Length: 106
Image (cartoon, rainbow, N blue to C red; front, side, top):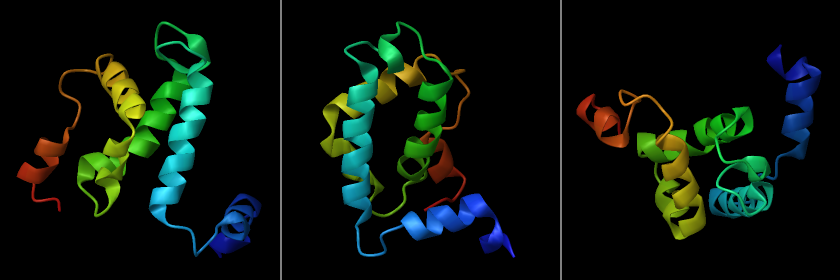
């Protein structure tokens, strides 16, 4: 049923089942560096905006949850620096990798 929704169908069609998560992560890191446009945050801004927060949520969840292979993001120092800048603007009680480990996540 869900696969009939246009957006979902297009996403499925665009998915390359042979491509590794590492390759997708490399592409995402390259895209974010372009979107930063030499600034601290996307669009060359000095403060994070909705695109930063959205991308942070999508890219950081597997890493923060400790999913297998997600630590490949550490190969991208500029992306890790951007993560740190975004996290500095999040509430201090935001969930962290150690929080998830304490809760029994992988």
